[in-house]
Image (cartoon, rainbow, N blue to C red; front, side, top):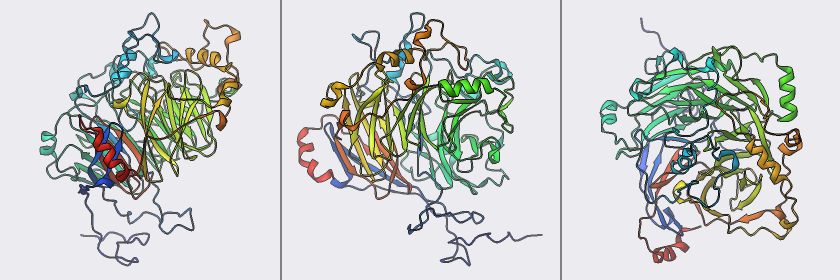
Length: 614
């Protein structure tokens, strides 16, 4: 007997009986190739030309989805609970290093140290870390595109037998990677609304270039798997529509990827997390219905050197380490009041559950509370030891996640910080936020180096261009809600600090250096382990962790080398690849700009600069 489905709980546009209703139509992605000076980026090294403008179709609301709350009564359109379209890019086969890449870091042959003390090699360690940090590319999510093998930093929880891989063995063969349990295509879960695989998915996977780019992009309540090197890139491999949850962030595990296996994790507005393997169409749902933390996931990353563990930032100020293969259990904080009180006093980081907990059969693996403010983004350092965290309260923190200890805390001029990334050599951290500024921080000097002024609205994404960096010069890109893309060239030698900087007290540099040297750990992980090599006089006080705001008069200002409006909607993501620059906006437009061709003369730059830069 055939039973009609129930009517929608809420009137939704596109459904019969709703305002402007009618038959619901599933839209498709569109690909265009605009030309002209207005679609070019003119920089000193040449002209970046727009190659593709890919517009991802925004799915309509689900019939059972409640009307979106409008926080702004003056807004003409109601915004969905989404953070805009972001991309996770992966190359299933290692790409050959390009000779055009400028960044080459070799501390062994350098006349001076190019990395901060915290990531220099000790005499009993290999020197592969620094060279690897300089030779690996960085994708749009701030994760190295090459495997993290060779980095001497241990994996999180490597000293804890309770976190060992199941069955006591680890599969090094990519073809034998463990996969999630449930089939997402045949799933009867109310969390997944619909899965639309390509009709010739198997054939397209066989024809895929091993060195080509896979991309996973979120748009509203949908996730799309795309092939960016295909001539028909507008046709998705798989599109997943979720019922009421919106995917806000996602990340691909670069260490487990292979021609037949890709691990991706997604964080949702409901707090749920999904581990998804697109090749086999399998998935596992973690933190189901907010069993551990019910707030939305604002950012998510796989932990360095780990196949199972990943870190999720929740909007209540919590950083939680999950294991993709462990079951969830209701979170109850352990009775460690003395340790937590010591943590709050010395490091201002509350560790509610550490990797040394006796019971590691269930998630979470570790639970860190940074503040009561929303965490907007975080990024792991190239040495796989530190994590930079930016929050809505305007704070920027450097945490040694192996020791679960806060090292530095900085504050913005005003407003929250939205985005963060590390330089390829780990010497600098760049942040952007609601003060419309891009800020460059030095970990060696434990201070603010420069402010980059040029945006007219909030800065939503910052990234280093590893193919335009060397030992002393750095290329930084940023996008914002002003719909503009800005490029910055930063060099230590080019900065002329204001006259007021000469009176700045430099007494904190020595203590900061000691502080970073304390962050070196061995294979075992303890929460607040003391270092017997340091005397009691070298122990850091609470005041030295929280740094004062640097006055504007003492801060060097850096102008952009290129500023251009590249979209009609606020931009939310930026990525640098070997042959292109990519941006995405809140409405699902993904734009790809080809890098300048070799041998492009300066005459072309001078004739088109005035016409293309706005």
